[in-house]
Length: 460
DNA sequence: AGACATGATTATAG
DNA sequence: CTATAATCATGTCT
Image (tube, rainbow, N blue to C red; front, side, top):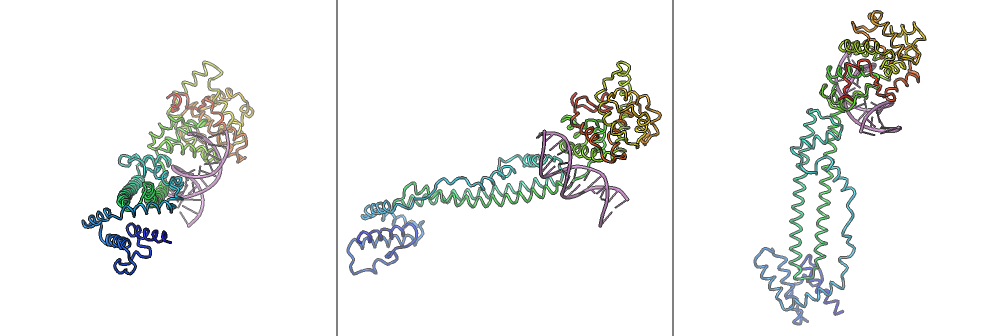
């Protein structure tokens, strides 16, 4: 009982000094209490009173210092302190159950990662342009300096600025508060037992509180970025058609490499430069073109012819010369690779009656279903020019062999789509599929390929 | 307004 | 990674 009383008293004192007022006698004016007072009790009462007045007053007051000093020098102080220590030891459950290192919150990690990825929390990138570029690259590499782009950039910068200022503010506040609390605790440790561990723990609690606030900040920043990003993506989706010139260049390349329309990286770069679009746009374009061409070859016939002619005109002489050379030199032309391809196409086209060429073929019937393209090719050449001119190739083509070759390949390619059999038979597929499979450097290559050529890929 | 053209994105496969 | 195929969303033409 006696002990209990002492504890109560002690606790009351501590509470008053440190935090809230509690305990039975704490609030009572010491002097209102008389009766059974012995000297000790009065002393304690005095101390308590002093403590109370301290808590009631601002600590800044110079007076407070004196009082504290007085308190510390009080003759009862060491005794009280040791009692407090003792009690603390006995009741030492306060520190229990504090899992100091809670594992990093996965959600927080995610937020951090995202902020980092978006260039919000990472190192400041000069002017934000790098960040924007990174964002653009990440999202597909649209490097066009469109309005949306700069808009995105500025908004992102804005977000980043806000984020950083807020973060700094929080950090500062956290530090200030932490030091304040630590000072307070240290100060109090003179009056009551406070282990460094407790201080540490307190700091930990403070940090946790602040980090939860930070998390909110991060979360809202993430949201802002997400919104911005989605808006940007939407904007990006607002496509613009390429310029006519660009389309022309791309088409030219496509049709002049019809048998293997897979521009190398270098070629893509070159095309991109020529068209003032990005490499990925070039890739997109070719991807779309290939699939759409393959899907409906008929639709592209005209276009194909047109470009074939065009290319042919430009490359005609050189090609003609080359072809002639090769012919004269060796009957087994070096072009066989290409021939093979075309021939495959021819097979499909056999049914097509749409083009003059096909007619020609059909006329000569069996001649082209042979594997031996070389022959076919030769015969075609001889047939060439005249009969061909007025043909469906609406363009006034004066081209020679070349054009013919182009047209052959083209016709071959899409004829089946037009023909009676709308779909391209497996055969056709194979032929086209040949695109990819047949990638043989045979290079295929279409007609123009040889000499004229854009096919700078390998060479370059 | 509707159909078609076209650049971009997504899902999937090798 | 690249390629294809399907699909989306917009641009453009009628």
